[in-house]
Length: 375
Image (cartoon, rainbow, N blue to C red; front, side):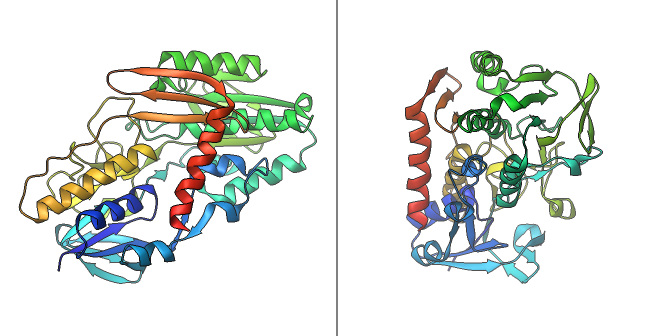
């Protein structure tokens, strides 16, 4: 019986399980993760306003594991040996005939004083901390920004920071407290959100101006103080700082034979094969893939890569060539608690639709649909 091990329990990992089981009913699948739960990270943006609670977004994977006949190995991955055929974990070693790595990325926390900033996408705890801070504040300055990995431009989380920014603006207006707060958006890039296209950037900056949000753009980050954001273009005061740093690969990558990109991610080809490795594939934030410089790696794109990885892994294990490839596609809804801006970009077209309530409903519906499958 074929033994396939999948590392991770996020979008890419679960999609890989579904795809493999659809194509092969009999192979043995082992899922390795620190916890047997799935956290729906895209909806962290709704925790500060109270639209979502932690329990709304955390789902047990027990039913999923049973439905897809998966062996669950609860542990942290610590390394690989034997060219990927042996996975080392905190709960023992696992042998495999095929491996898919979908362990996500790691935030680069090297800036001096970064402990003074909250990194929203770290999870439920961070989102609740934002909620509690906002609730306790009578007014003041909130600074929200993001940066990228300079050696891996696609390794960033810009979209959620726009959502936290516009979401907090809407939340404070709904609470009739907006006049007591100053919102400042900061980013080393002069055109934040440029991966979505020039039109999207123009729309985002125009909306910031309309909402009375100040900007501090195009200056390299130097660090943070207890209540201060420091850049090469100057520094400014902030009572609360939300900052999303760029991302790199998992720490354990460095102690393996896995080939790493300059930015610390796993080098992969268009088939999601890890370069130079047999029966080893990668999907999502863990990988460095060929494609246009605007191509994302998370959520929707991670799903496309996971399906590609699963299909090609099974083909390679059957001594057939890997032929499936993924389509480079950036598709997202930038939500602001009551409306959403829809953006789509492919290699042939790109467009941005203005803020509409229907897109907020669409984002909520997708959350419901996705979590319903797990529940």
